[in-house]
Image (cartoon, rainbow, N blue to C red):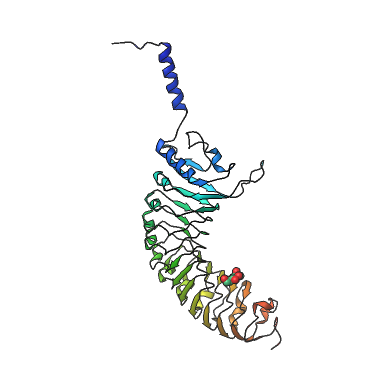
Length: 366
Ligand SMILES: *[C@@H]1O[C@H](CO)[C@@H](O)[C@H](O)[C@H]1NC(C)=O
């Protein structure tokens, strides 16, 4: 049996060993993936990547966060725009070009991917992101991302937030999206997405916001949407949607914002819609016809009620006087006719302008 001899050499070796474990480092494969991600993007010289040096990506790298125990990368969060601190001037360069490298798919512990408002980041969403099974948050708002959404996005079973608003994404909403049963927010506004809204989107019972405005979606509103119990905010405006407005939208428990403006919806306004809990209702620029339903009640509280630019006709409903509040009202550009209820005599005349024969204050006497 040989005894350990503390020669100067062994002491040195032990010291080095102690030191190297103190200088912490990311797993080499994660470090390599992050560096590849960085090199596919072009940031300014004083941009966010100046902090991405050394081998410990978990401690001082801006926008990178690791899991405490595994020390694997859990979050990439690069948001452009000013930061507000008490001491420094709110300044941060907020323009980046380049692409999102598929190498991020090697960060298999990733749960948040947030790359927002860099304006110049282009290319596609790497197909392989749908293999990142721990992803909970994907937010790519405000870039120039093109291509389609990954067809197998439905594999991301942990996903709660999907946002890719203000990009150049085309193609259809992948049908597999309806398998993301934990999804709470979906925001794909202002892209070039076409085709129908998936028929069974209503399976996503955790959804509270569906924001799809400013695309080229066509076809009807799927009836299943009306069964999403938690839905608060539904924005389908500025698309090519057709068909009637489902009556069941007026029976939803917590729906408070409904924007269907600038589409091709036809038929009558469902009476229930006016007597519901909706406080912001925009149906303007459609092809809605018939009378404005006489279904206002004391529970009506509208911050916005915009029915302008349709084919509505007939008199204003008597029950309008019983609404408890209508903040912004626009009935202009229809074919309405008859007296304006006196309780609306202080409303701006533009709210009633361009109809066939509405009369009384604020318009000319009957
Ligand atoms: C309603 O929608 C129209 C058309 O999209 C828009 O111009 C208008 O500003 C909206 N109304 C309100 C009050 O936001």
